[in-house]
Amino acid sequence: MPERRFPPPWSVEEPDPRLEQPDLDAIQARANELISAGQYDTALVEARRLEERVEARFGPNHAAYAIALRILAIVYRKQGKYAEAEALCQRALAIQETKLGRDHLETAATLNNLANVYRDQGKYAEAEALYQRALTIGEAKLGSDHPFVATSLNNLALVYENQAKSAEAEALYKRALVIEEAKLGKDHPDVATSLNNLAIVYQVQGKYADAEALYQRAPAIREAKLGKDTASV
Image (cartoon, rainbow, N blue to C red):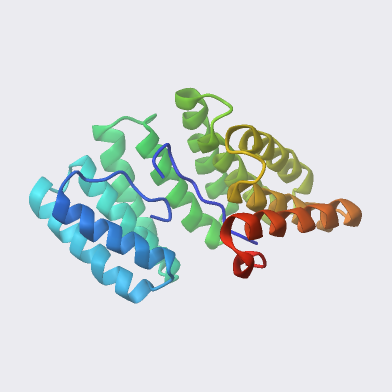
């Protein structure tokens, strides 16, 4: 199942806001590119370099340092090093809650990253609580029809799906799809991902005709937007 992204109004797994330091921004961009390409060993080198330099420049309690910690945590999660990823996310979250506030969008992004770590380990109750909190922040800050909220809904739906709560997952996927089609357009790649997610739920529910219709629509969007080679990805 394609993994949902969770970009705040900016958009490394969730590309983070720039640090506004040219040398650090370059390292950050390189780390993000390597993460996206699945080159996690090389990404780890860049992420560690970023973390060291940001700490040296801003200190260990600065909001910018939380961004560096979050990027490093993403790499560890991708490598299956969940204990390391969890510890870094928790450090980043503590910094953000203190420096930015509990209801800041940066805090929501880190909540999502920590929830991802829990979900990967099958800790669905913990993941659900964090996704719910991130969703609440997004709705309060951006409104209920923002793409940020749509991605939050998809993340929460995935946790429900993991727990075989197909009715709850279906409702959230549908709501996310409505937002994405309205705000991003019916031919946006995020719409294709949501269609595929919803199709999987329909298939589990035995709604094979409904699932087939969505499965056919999703690749058509990807092919039109990204090229034929990506249609089946």
